[in-house]
Amino acid sequence: MNTEAMVLDIKKELRASMNGILSRRMREAGLPFKLIFGVELPRLQSIAGEFPRGAELSGKLWNQDIRETRLLAIMLMPPEAFTPDVANAWAEAMVSAEEAQIMAMKLMPHAPHAKTTSMAWLERDKPLPCVCACLCLRHLLVRGSAIGSEERHRIEENLKKLLPKANLHLRKAIRALEEKMKDEKINK
Image 1 (cartoon, rainbow, N blue to C red):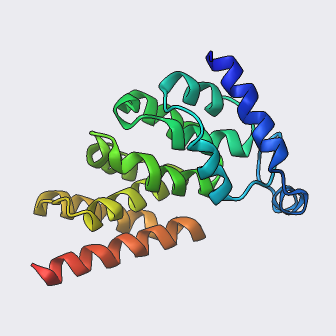
Image 2: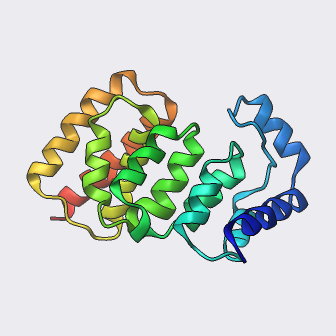
């Protein structure tokens, strides 16, 4: 099956799984997508399991202005194909905290450049990439990745700069990372 056919099949699955009430609530809440099917994350994960992972399919899904196809793009992107260039392009194109959170949980921690890219994103003044970076770094710490003292200092300094102007999602992500880093320090 070619990529275009898979995109059409995915859209059919999304239509069949549509939750009109949730879709309406998301639109009313101001989610900035052209189309929202209101499909819950467990169903999206199930749909993702029905299709092969691939950079081409993920790219086509990401470029749709549909909440669910963008989340599926994150779930279907192979970590090895999620190069720093692709990661940076997707970070710039993120439009919702949900995308940042799913990327931080499902994709970024598995990419070979996760720590360096996340640390670079913390130095930007863009809330959604910073949310993703904080949550990714926290996830890496949970998985046992080491963060050196110089890296720790750099992260702490960036978090201090971000916190005063952080929105709710970013504040929560910063606090989650700070708590995990504090736990790591105590356990050493």
